[in-house]
Amino acid sequence: MSEDARQDELAARLATVHERIEQACIAAGRHPDEVTLIVVTKFFPVQDVVRLHRLGVRDIGENRAQEVAAKVADLDPVTRADLRVHFIGQLQSNKAAHVGGYADCVHSVDRAKIVSALDRGADRELDVLIQVDLSGRDSGRGGAAPDQLGHLADLISASQALRLRGLMAVAPLGADAAAAFARLGDLASAVRADHPDAGWISAGMSGDLEVAVANGATHLRVGSAILGSRPAQR
Ligand SMILES: *Cc1c(COP(=O)(O)O)cnc(C)c1O
Image 1 (cartoon, protein in one colour):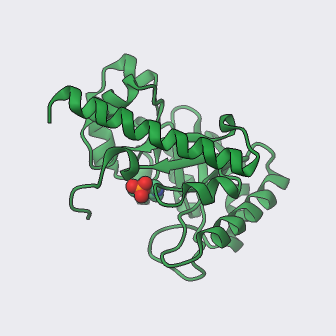
Image 2: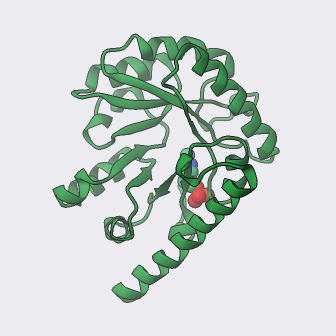
């Protein structure tokens, strides 16, 4: 595909997603400014990040440490400084200390060990969200059990470098996304009662962004609807 064709394709798909978000906001009686679109560029080359930046995208999401570190290093410094990089993947505590080197925000904090590793490694303020496991069992996809949220939120607040911004979740496979995101909204309200700055709700992907907007999501993480289907997933 020629350079321009890919640019045009991304522009068209991005416009479609913005239109979906706008319609979802109208239906929910919300203002589109309340919702931030994070374009998930995992598995796609840095050239697509540059194209998206040209189209006005300022928030990108990535889920693998090595991949995002390499991509960020390939960006020219001006473009890099103009982007917010959101890390949305599962973190290992031995790698967490380095996240601040390539990400501005981490959505996937789910245990005390990650809080301390991130805090130790950070050389500047880092925005974090607690990932919640809404499956009701250990799904293996990461996320803290709902009864751990208060404890983790307090640990983050007591840290030196981490700023608690809110909660993140993925709708459990096979579950009713509306019920899951409604639950997430309730959990977020409970956290916000003790931590007033933690107002972000990161929920909703290509297939369920409307449901997420209807249930109060402030940040959507959309990949395939904009970039196309990913090459073989690992
Ligand atoms: C890949 C990914 C997304 C984007 O999913 P799409 O269905 O491609 O929009 C969102 N959130 C997380 C945590 C992801 O890993």
